[in-house]
Length: 81
Image (cartoon, rainbow, N blue to C red; front, side):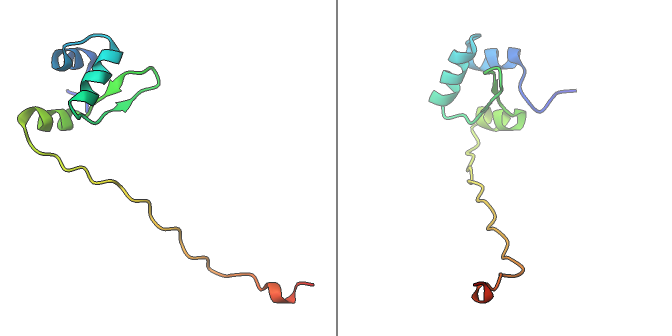
């Protein structure tokens, strides 16, 4: 069963580079979105890679943070001396 993240061998096959720094540079230069692991390994989603390699235009939508909830009550400071 395939994982959701491309393996090291698959990244080498796509980028043509084995050093992770060169893989990251290639991905950045080609406009690929990836997440970097703690060890510096670029993590690329399998479905994303399939879409990029097939030429499908991918519109990325930035995720906006949800507004903070309204407070249930507010303190009455008028009675504080």
